[in-house]
Image 1 (cartoon, rainbow, N blue to C red):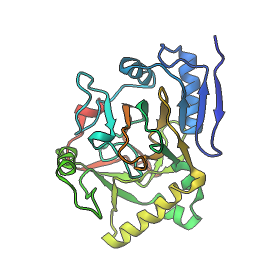
Image 2 (cartoon, one colour):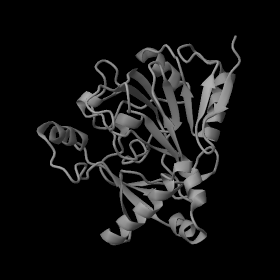
Image 3 (cartoon, rainbow, N blue to C red):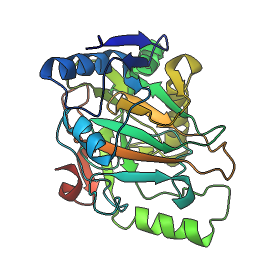
Image 4 (cartoon, rainbow, N blue to C red):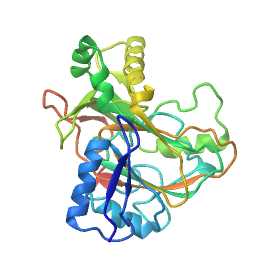
Length: 295
């Protein structure tokens, strides 16, 4: 049996794992070691895997209960927990975000598996939001500790351009159920106790601040998350699998591959309600508790 090896690929985030066949059931010790590595490195990368949808579901389920594919977007036919991320069907997440933060209990972790890879571009960038928090000046960190933000799936995704008919339909589906949730801007990680910025694309306003000041402050905080030293870039190859901690990261897929096809399948592990530094948990402002999604 090949010994598991974990090789850091970034100073602050990311490690490549070798010696693990993710298509096979893993023993408890291996799962524990991978979870430990996930907490340490935030994103784990596995090259040359031979997974189908069943195997990806089985792999992800070893880290917790699975969510369904998405609160509003349809799943893969016959696979209620698999979300197809397809460039030919609007799957170009050209914005920094943490998955599904507009519900009260966003996913614990996400897995992405490559099915079709463009010959150039189409990388995925993942950022460490905990080191971003540590980078904040003391005064800004103390302010962030006290802030709460409203996350929503209902905002203008097509800023700066006129959406075509297909894009308008995708947005209609995405916002078929409207969610507005208050989350702490600084989240305390439930396993490690580390603090991290919990914002990203779905965070649209700061509670208690006027619109202009709210947007300026979110932009300032977000700039720390996306500093190059906090980011790892993954160049996809067929058979790659990525596992990242959705509680401590943001990710972004640059739309830089022209009209080339790109297809990934996403499976997410259910999480809990974020908790801020005072111990208060996230709460709903509008919408339901997404029980159909979060299990």
